[in-house]
Length: 567
Image (cartoon, rainbow, N blue to C red; front, side):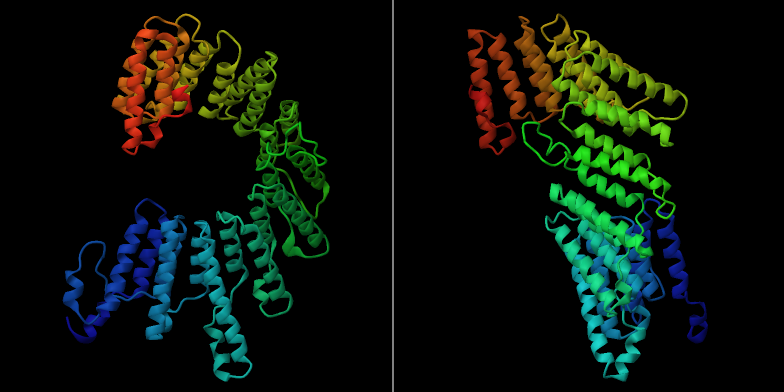
């Protein structure tokens, strides 16, 4: 086929763009890779459109195509990268933008010119990956081009014609960079976000760039930066900005109407530092974070009757406050959490499993200070309540709930604590809840704490044998790790059994076969030898020490001797 007839049947770029769009929108595994294969084929056609042999001989991660990519093609791939957040994808999006700019610079072909969608998607991809420096750099480059356009437009008709091709940095682009700051690990991200937010206000209020006007998303993202800082100053500043948003909205700025997400961001700031400022020995004039969070929760409740704001707390709102009390080290925190849990149904916000788990965590923290047996009874009542709600289809119970209750039994002073923990493990198995190495480790620890009672050390060994059997059958979630082996040997060390050292030695042999034992595990073995081996076992202890020293010399620093080793 030659000449015009060939062109008539050649696939158009729109056809390829429809396929790329369908693949990206399908959001199924492997579709992004397929889309990139087509896109690379389009790039190859662009680069070798006059060399049929070069194109046909290229195999691998490229699908032969007969049309060059355009802006839509680039934007579709960039969108796909933004939907799969990660450092690799963020870098790839930045590199693809740079390639697009270079191609446009060489060809001056308007069909591949980066547009506002291009920049918006790239900035979003970088934001999702927390790549704040790269996102900020692209935004600054855009601002420079825009400022240069503004200067030229005052004296040049040519510059006025550029208005159709210049990309104006808009609110969405600025918000993406703010989001990048919020997701980055930069300790100065909150300060940088505030500076950018101030720049947005200045650009819009002076008329230099009205498209940069900040909205509640902008302010909420700055609040998130402060909330994630993990400092009291950050939590305080987040709440100050919330007050600013409410004030601006009440004065007629509709773009600053706060929603429950903004309030939750502020509450998270207090949750992130709860426990850090709760030491009762410290003379603090300020309320502890949990108290501040509960005060803000009451304020949110007061907005229910404000038809203009229309703020209604959701389950997550209450859960953040419950989390604050769970993390608090203050006496009475469990009671505070229980009171909030009981209020939730009455305000039309039934608690979920996270709500109950936070209260159970608060009870666990209370039990670490107060051995009152009534606390474990109250935890049991909550667990039974959860099971009734689960039976009614109103709640799910995940393994974390079982683990919290199991830990309560394991760390309690109850003689039957190990048996109660095992009952829950078997309950998880019968309920189809995922059992893991953590589940077994809790049971082993419960046995180790009661190893002086007859049979508990053997029970700990039995749990380890179960883990090994399950892992050998392919259940890698239950594969024993250093902690598992160490806890069993601790149980043997406390048991006083005459054959404790011999059994510990077999466990060590199995550990060395399955994992890379660390210094904690070797120290547990040494402790067992010292407590149960008698004078005749000195050579075994010395042999273990020599092995640890040899490992350190060979680069195994996780197994090197510690102060505990030599005690």
